Image 1 (cartoon, rainbow, N blue to C red):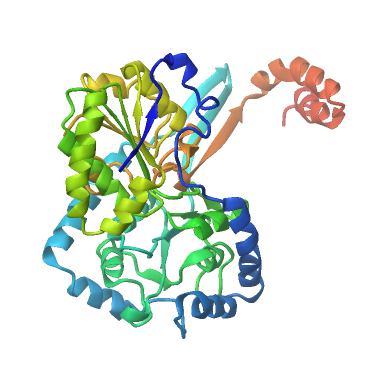
Image 2: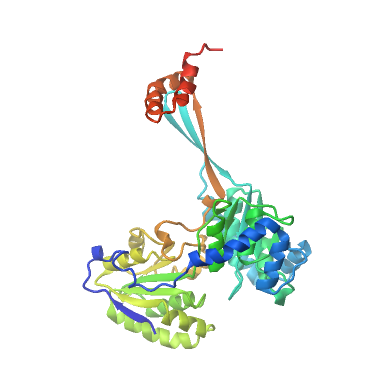
Length: 438
């Protein structure tokens, strides 16, 4: 079921991103091409506002909206009809996510650069944030939690949620998504999906004021819209098809490994799954477990396409080599089911999130670990992080300086201003030093 990639005989230093390019499988997400397709949509929304949003919603979603904003009574009704067990689970997920994200907040920091000169760093929240919650193959009330809670913890004043309308639900987003919004106190929800939703949030319409930051996962067109709109609005990562890498040794339980591979594969036929192990026998045992479990999977066709497509078992000479392969691939999710998993996790450089030990599956992180499940994909974990409070905050430096401290800098300012041929810069400092005190 899984292709086999044999990297035995290669030292860890040889298992680099460059040398493994084209060797390790991954779904291709052509954001650049999609960006050219969605650019006219975004520009049209900028020019025509709600009328353009309505036209694209009718074209792409088959729903003719009288207004994008979901009525308050629809939110109340969805929450009232929410299954009690789901409600309790969402409340606990929100509680745990709040705890973890509160720990990310930092107070003001004041640095004394020199006597009389201080710089105070202040993290200030944006005024208004937009959250995108995808539709597609399944429903994601957990994504409401993962996007809304960090914004709330950061102190954002206004949060607007956009989620695709569904004809089967009266042209509104899925009721469970609406209920999750209501549960978290979100009153502004728009029944809009795709690139037109992000453009609406970025540029604003008469129904939706423009936001400062947009976050949330979606398909390739959502990722492309983020690329097109970056600079108009702040964004998080260009999230693509989900992925998992699992580092496992001979102590790992093959049933757990197979279950976790299937759990990731059921998201999307484009999901990528790697099992990286120095134990060839384990690879065989996992293959046997997969053969039995995939047949019973609820989303068997989706799982089979993922596992047969951009997924593989990778054999290495040892755990150090397995770590090198994982770092080269830079997965969205990395599980470590091996001896000293916690210590190995501390050596990981490139991953969206690391799950250490046999009882920390990715599914825990998806819902109830408290960590965020909006994570970098496609190898972008090399340079990007998962969603946190940080995209909703800006660092503003406050500089305070006395006359004497400014005088000390004058020779240096004069030297640098002279080197850059900016004499007015020097004059602005000199005027304060040579002028009589008021």
